[in-house]
Image (cartoon, rainbow, N blue to C red; front, top):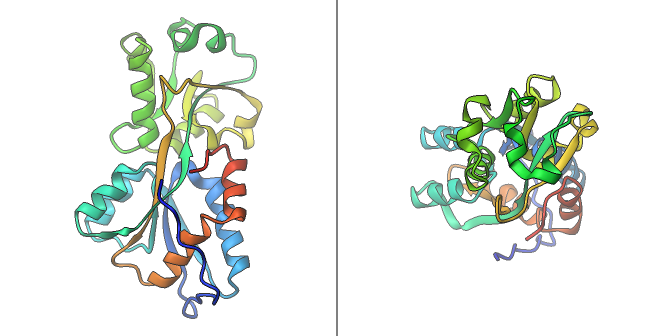
Length: 249
């Protein structure tokens, strides 16, 4: 487990008018917005500009020259690949949370995940199952892997509705465009999704996913970016992450 460097005693201030640019995994939306507000409150004058999307999409953009100060990935693989590619230093990568995958069902769903496990998704009443695109989203890959481990992927693969990110997969679920969804727990406690049923998956089917933060070599605000990573290790940030269902490293 990587230890985060403690915040320096003297505050790190951003240049006037220059926000800290953060590329954040879609699974972090609510948590990241709250983290940004808390960081700004702790450092008067600092501003955080958040962009949300699939971690793999950001990875491709960063490889092609996109400029961000910080990358908050939904896994550790993409940050490690950026370090290997010379776009960040290993010392600037930190695990900030462990994400978990759950099954979400709409209110009144007859699908018995608790009793039958993922095999229940093969029921004829389940026409569409929302997951994020495994090609770009770590939680999409985790969802596909869980279905395979449960021996149900072949039975349900034609029912899978792929979101460009977990945010879009969650939108499918919340608008009734899916009869079930495999989503990160962090997205299931707000809005319409909060009214559904959430069934955690066993670690044997869906191990917790280490999620890393990374200061990028091209950061315009490297000192502030490192202060933000250190902030993620503090009690206030950890309490926010825990409230959104994350496990803590």
